[in-house]
Length: 191
Ligand SMILES: CC(C)(COP(=O)(O)OP(=O)(O)OC[C@H]1O[C@@H](n2cnc3c(N)ncnc32)[C@H](O)[C@@H]1OP(=O)(O)O)[C@@H](O)C(=O)NCCC(=O)NCCS
Image 1 (cartoon, rainbow, N blue to C red):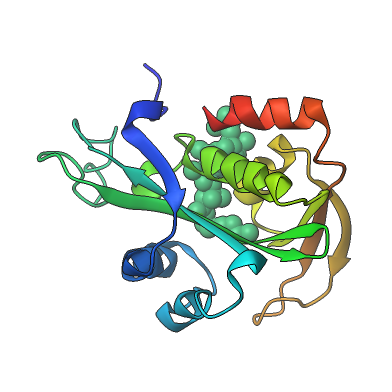
Image 2 (image 1 turned 180 degrees about the vertical axis):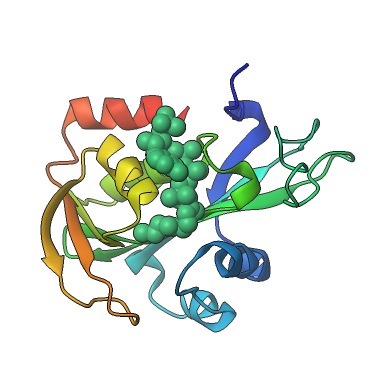
């Protein structure tokens, strides 16, 4: 049985200020250097056309996520409800888009949520004129690096000691993202 979350269960939509606490709580649980509530809130104070922030909202959990309750992860089954399970944000600098952060609640990881968020972020960025995309990621973050590779990002160098704890960052780039074969790939990854 596929663990993938079906398209009708997942809504990708813009981040609202009312989502910030939920998003910061997810971030707190999954990130090594979590963004604070204040940092997320500050994203609403910058010029609106300099950013794109999206969330993934599960319309209904319906049945419990596979194995989600077996090892102390949050109880997801039961009543139908709407719940933010992931987020992603990017910043525009001239014709480049810088992916700033992507995160998915642990209980629903590896079910295609980040893939859909990133595809929507990149499609939105191309719509706004971005021609290339870049990001920094911890060299030890094999999950995120594998995700970005699926989107054609390639390592282009290292920022030594980029993170507070001294870990290096890999700099990744995806170029010529406006190509029709690339946008077609994004459309298929978004589904
Ligand atoms: C990285 C992260 C966002 C991936 O989210 P996700 O919703 O689990 O990812 P998806 O299910 O969409 O996976 C898409 C692809 O990414 C790669 N991937 C995701 N998680 C992986 C893992 N644990 N190990 C190896 N590859 C992984 C795979 O290539 C996967 O495709 P596949 O399942 O068809 O093999 C999630 O692990 C996370 O929130 N990590 C903590 C925060 C973080 O590190 N963010 C990135 C900061 S730069």
